[in-house]
Length: 108
Image (cartoon, rainbow, N blue to C red; front, side, top):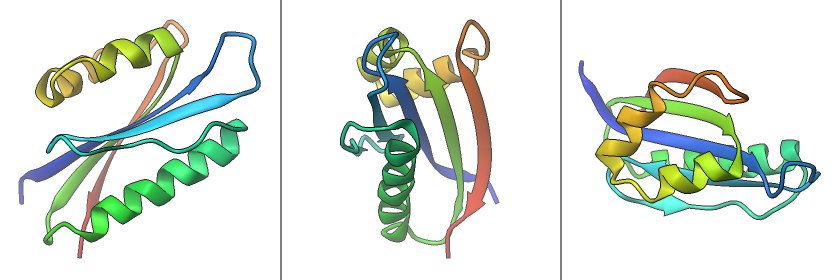
């Protein structure tokens, strides 16, 4: 079974020295959701909740999810790309303070 929909879960600090984190959940289909600002673990948990809500509406398929922890500058640049360009760019982001964790899930 091929990959159906792709998602990027972006997590990033509001400023480099801030304890406030932001996030975005972006679908290759163009849908976007953003958790509220807060502590990293809280924003990550809310982003996961948003992701699962988005997954609920999909037909059964294999889904690719890219978890990206990065800087605000990189996250902002990714958010301005088309969904296709965003997922091509995410593949090459590992390093320089950015971590990328791709996962394959199956929706039911």
